[in-house]
Length: 591
Image (tube, rainbow, N blue to C red):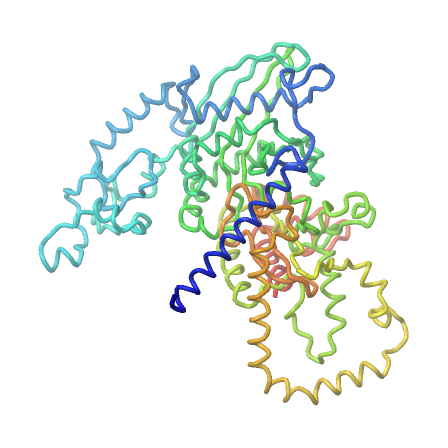
């Protein structure tokens, strides 16, 4: 056997061993647990799930109505439903009637020279005629050979062309196809809602009637397709994975308005109720959100919204309206087993601190805030003997290259949110300690109690050791410059070896595959880096961006200013200032 054959044989045997170890980790976990990949928490049980009526969960009634809304969006033919266009005030009609009407309208219109998005549900390349009176720019193929290009064939052979559009020169701006973007709104059902009535028995035995609405079902189906979610997997997670898992939100605002939060059994999706004001805002920004996701869907950190439903329930003359949204879960299903820290970062400082009591009570599930990260960063920075203390090596350490990519995408996302005039969003960060040395990331309290930081918090003047340390640092600068290339290569080799071992070994995850989210949040939703000198995996997501900038928020801002608060440190600021402050904070605490 030659050397190449021996090498291939070694690689094959190594792959078999690694695959066996990974599969064995899943088998071992299953031998100790009932199921794998299941969200931990209190299941939401109905009358059919328990023997004793007292074991039922009160919120099962609204989750059942929510399930009917999902079925209405996926299988409308199973319901006696109706569709409305809330913008055009169309007459009530079935979906097939609406589609036929659209086809009649489209057949009479002159279409632009447009390479259509193949994800469009109502228009295919074959439906678009290319003979039109409006003058257009000729392609290079036409100029050289006089041949008109077959765009439909090109799209099938070159997939990325479906995201490109060709401009059209139109002298008469009153032409019906001049405003192409306005016609796009007729292609997508941004303003459509599908409704039906459902009656069922509650957990208390009462009869309840619910009026259920599925908002923009085709648009959300297209978004799910763009997110890489098949309809089969979506249906399985929502309707077949098992009972939902109840979740107690850490948001004080959600607790005040009585918000409901729950996860699917497999942890892939989070479902929550939103206020009417937020629902109205979401429907208004849906066209921009949809377009942004079509362009930046692979990298954007924005929440992946997969559906929106309204449930209007009536029982014993009590009427209650709740609006649900389905979104991807930022963390994996069993993240409580390996995520050691969670951060909710807004860039503001007023009231943005997790108390010590909350940390003790919730442990690793406690959500740390902006001031907690600021204190930790400043504390570690104070140990740096360098006279020029830069921000390199503090906070979330991703490296200059990955930091640039992250901030570039965040700027795109924030620019969309500023254009939509929303604020109060935050970057949710989960930290999983993947250091093979199994050294826990020290907390601020641990660092404060350590002897290393004893002089930092002392009121005495700085000792001579610090001055000597700075002098030695200045002397060794030329030597550090000389060995910098070798040091860089050494660090890269160590990092490569660590990432290779981490991909083979499952530690600290309970089994192979536990670190994977049920829904892919994008290329930047999971990144490797360091924190406090330890190798970590970061889970990232930009959440809660449905709060509009209203007159009430303006009044709240100036009321807090009158109360003595720093007007630039509170969360309630206009979208432009909020976005700028948010990006500056992330830039300062990511290195």
